[in-house]
Image (cartoon, rainbow, N blue to C red; front, side, top):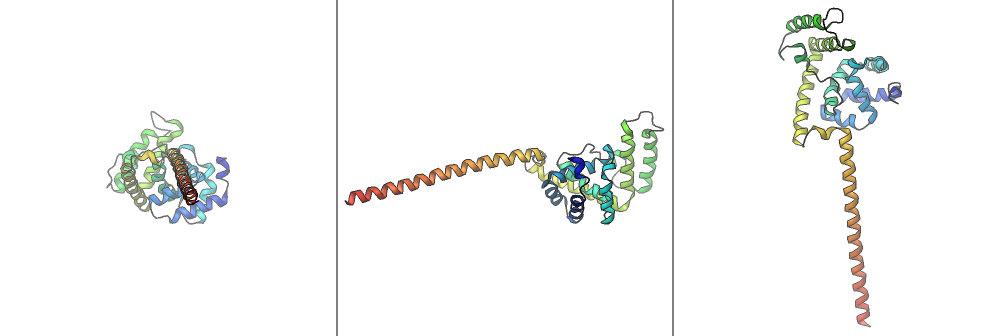
Length: 222
């Protein structure tokens, strides 16, 4: 089923077109939450570095055709994935590279070269599975060294923090989890059903009293 999603050209095209023009993180969250397929796409795109992204080639081709950079699409989805607890790696790119938020490109480049030697599959002393640390470092470096991607990433961090604050104000981020949301909706539906049943019973009693009073008055007149 999952593989079919990534072969559905129409679905992927709708996803990219809609995602491209949504203005902020809350709008993105609402859009992705509305379809299980979109949640699957969001999870796979954000975690592409962990799983590999061969099955995302069609999506990348569609992004190219729509003139929408795949990396930008991924950056826009990161705070959404974190809100739904779909991310496998929630590393802050600045913390991952060990630089400050206002570090200049030269400092980022120098730090990256130093760290990459430690984790590169060919030079590192301790190698993680599939060179995942190296891939994460490379993604962080490419994002923070590109002015446009860095600006988008910083905006995502800001939006994510605002959304978390809003979510915590509403009794925690766990409410954003699709499974929890489904349970809440089920509970609401059950409560609404009971409310309507009680309302119907109350209305029936009112009608019954009205009919009884009417018959009583008729009998009294006779």
